[in-house]
Image (tube, rainbow over all chains, first blue to last red; front, side, top):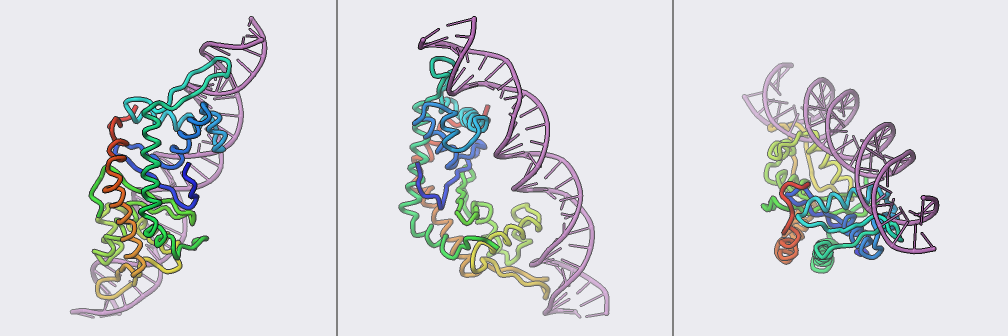
Length: 118
Length: 118
DNA sequence: GTTCAATGTGTCCGAATGGACATAACCGCC
DNA sequence: GGCGGTTATGTCCATTCGGACACATTGAAC
């Protein structure tokens, strides 16, 4: 997961989808945990909200990013699809691009920014 | 101004400032028009809102991005400070970085995205 | 067939957001 | 001294967003 708490990147697509660190981390946690609710807990987010975000993401693509199933030994679960992993990887790549090649511009942008705004 | 309507970049700083295309365009229009209200009109935004955004930006830095004055022949006006121009330039540079070096990742992210989400 | 943990869904409410108006203050110019 | 266009600021309201609960559904394991 992106480990720079100082900045996050949000992309606004013309489909209406906005994709930022929240959804990216959620996808990653779902991948790691195999569960929407576990991912939500890690993000201190209600299951309701986590599920809504997943639904929103799935609805914006012609193939779902997350596959889920109910019932069974562990109650159910969720996994990233290949598309889901691809989307996550591309977002992380853009984040890294900014962090690395945009480091100077970002440093200048942060310089002189009040920690507690007026 | 950024001319790709399909995507916009929003940065979230830990100061609480969020800076995206709206504020960037606003700064640029103020620079070009010499007036907050003219810039707001160009963005089909009320003066109230344009002014609020300027105030928010100014409050997040230890030096203002926009200088303004009341009264006079033309009623008053506003100009970008050196800091304002620097901030705008750095944001544009990051936008360009994404557009150019992130083109492939962005293209993949857009691929398969429904124009009208479910 | 009961249990269990997770998915799936509905509803309600407070907070935040943004748009719409309204009004005051300013000051060079005529 | 009045005019005009701009900055500056307050208030109100509809919409949106998110958090908090509540509850039904699923299916393997026991």
